[in-house]
Length: 507
Image 1 (tube, rainbow, N blue to C red):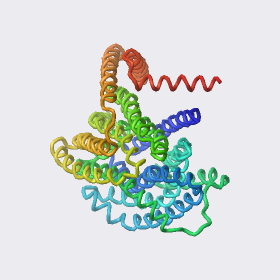
Image 2 (cartoon, rainbow, N blue to C red):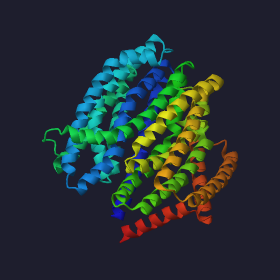
Image 3 (spheres, rainbow, N blue to C red):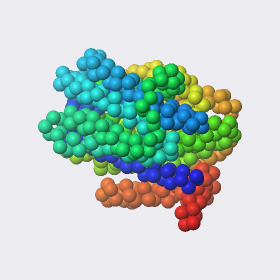
Image 4 (tube, rainbow, N blue to C red):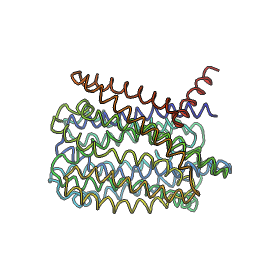
């Protein structure tokens, strides 16, 4: 079982990395064709609104369906339960899709009044196209959650890669003819192809009963669990939309700088943060099912220390290399040096949100496992009010640079509130264990930073890519060596697991 989970973890990390690289390539394609123009602003701003529903379904479904599906398996009702959720979600997603397409012409001018008529038109039609995807997204979300419940994490990621690659291909083929609409239509085609891929894997196994009549009381019971979780995810997108709304009033290009910087800086969170949180989720669910509270707490503590160990050096390393990274990735086609500098400045201020939200991923998994997602929802709603206040204050003071600063400070308050409530809920966790490991990890990162800054002084004349590779190797070696010498618990835990898996594979 452990070897299977280890293999699933490795496959998931690899697939997640591929997904993030695909998303990065998509951003590079947008930057190449549209630069920091109003077209890019309109497309990226429009995507935020339907993406709120997309994440509401995909992430919310995983957090709600994984524990409830595992519980239904214990009662030998897995096939029936999955079928009921699938059919109920299809109906609800179709309704949301129709409503979204109908209100898009009124919603875009309301949210982005500073957009030009041309930008408003693009944003409106892009929003309509994305809302047409929601019905397919709903079915995809249920099947992705099913894969996660079976520890087949990589299959969910592969299906998402299909969507992104379809968008990229559509842009290459049609961007010069129909502009930003090509990306949206490619996304629609990708969601359909992704659904076909999943059904091809699921239908022959007969793990889902879709022939029975929809039992709305059972669907309703599931959605009482799902709604707080999904709405919490949607609240995160509302916070992104708040930033986009304030950015839309900061002149042409501001929405684009915010989006590219956010996506790049949050890459470690998306790769490591979500990966670690997703992998420990089934383990936490089983601990709760067996009423094993000590094991549940231990899982949370291991998740928090492992997250910090992997994330902090990645984030600080990116910070030291940020000008090189943005120039290498984006500065071509319609994206000039001024756009590179602006995006770099925005990126520096997003780092706080990466750290805090990644740690919060672990804490939230604990809430969801205990079916206490409604508590996070209340905190999340409060975070919107804090975010609006911070954006108003900092955007007035620093322009669009105030938007990422507001996001980082809001993440600090949000994570702190979630941690306090969670600790009270479970009766405390081992803060001494966390503090010792966090202190050692931070010191190891300081040593790594000193080595990286020193080597950067020596290789400043080399090409960007060469500098990035050298710094990455030096930073990784110095951090690993420092972690080993200081006997950081999280590092030794990962090292021992790698050794065990190596022995298992040899056997």
